[in-house]
Image (cartoon, rainbow, N blue to C red; front, side, top):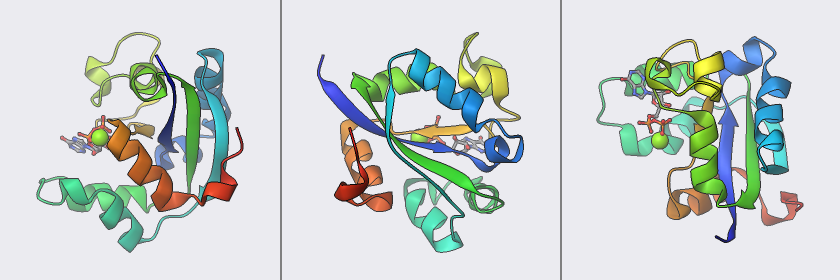
Length: 140
Ligand code: IDP
Ligand code: MG
């Protein structure tokens, strides 16, 4: 499998509870390298555009409110098969369904406040990285 880059967000529930280091340790101990990272407070417009694919879903407004409720950490993770590997490290969307040892099983508060975002395809990863980072900010 090839070296890939994927886009990750440590969500407001994670920053609020001071969990950024604990979550980053999960990535690093399982072979993902943080090649870019910054702490931002998303605007409503940014969150709406980022989650645009979900705009017709019933939870969309709540999701945008949650994602703008506090600071987040946006990141680019790099490694062998990073896109799928990160989804495995994260665990299922609903923490009730997440496997033991995953970030969401250990840390998520709810299906909405589930601590992390991770790209779900190579196309999404490329678009999401470009949305938040300039190429010069990625340092492998
Ligand atoms: P993912 O983050 O595991 O890829 P998606 O289906 O892409 O899950 O949903 C994006 C985000 O929307 C989730 O991470 C979660 O924060 C929120 N979300 C998804 N489904 C629900 C729901 O049924 N109720 C409330 N929030 C949800
Ligand atoms: Mg998703």
